[in-house]
Image (cartoon, rainbow, N blue to C red):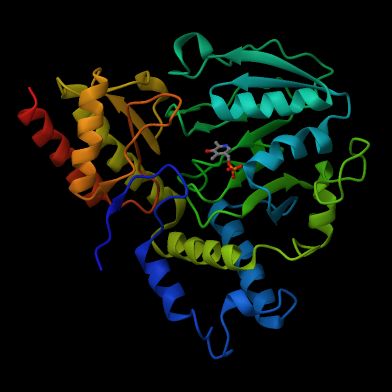
Length: 360
Ligand SMILES: *Cc1c(COP(=O)(O)O)cnc(C)c1O
């Protein structure tokens, strides 16, 4: 068995330890005689799995008691609709546009009400986070929306926007659990777990209690109303049982390895190795303004499409997979999520140095 260094943006690398443990438990989960895939979501055993997952996530993120944690389906993309359907009482909200995912959320919100562009970095192909200290937020807005880490363009909000007292809603899909966050600064945090935490098919939503009500937009489907799953502790219908089980293991792995403070240090160390090289290289260069650089997704280019293609091909042959940039932006992108070891980034940089030497 040879595992590659997988730099995929998502679904992405998971801790090897977690995968091995899951493999060991595949046929017989702790003496149950069946796989977690095969058991009732109403069973006692599964109840322990989902409750522990939630408890561990609460510990990791220090989630206050007045926030609900939900394990949902439909991807982060369904939350693009769930957010306005659950929150747009005045049918008006502000959106900060920092890339494809916030644009998609913005377009979805327009189905339900007036979505206002508060700021955008589209003028420079989303290569920076705009100044959000004094946005044109009006009193009648129900919330302010951000995509906190922009998976495709490789930017991250280093400072949350000044929402002028309005509720902050954040799509944290690609930076979820990569560093500590102050949950109390948000009304809603949600994340598709396939970027940094688990297998595709699970979305974690962390929503403040008072925002979970029956007062939703007319026509909101039962399954899109947060209250449905909040009241049922994520068991209104069959949840993505196996995915939640793997997420639970990843939460335990994060706790065991020092929690989010420690994780942030490791992620900063990894990102520094790659960015420092990009800054000194004569061949490769990063595409993002320094102050906005993501710790998770690092896009870079040579400036020559043919050379980019050659690099991606040779990297793959050397065991560095999924380095091709998003289909809409080209170039390269290394996603260096929690489960990518420091060694993987060091080896990638060695390979890049060697490639630079041979191609200049
Ligand atoms: C991948 C991604 C999405 C889309 O997630 P799905 O689960 O495929 O719907 C949304 N937002 C961000 C920031 C992402 O990285």
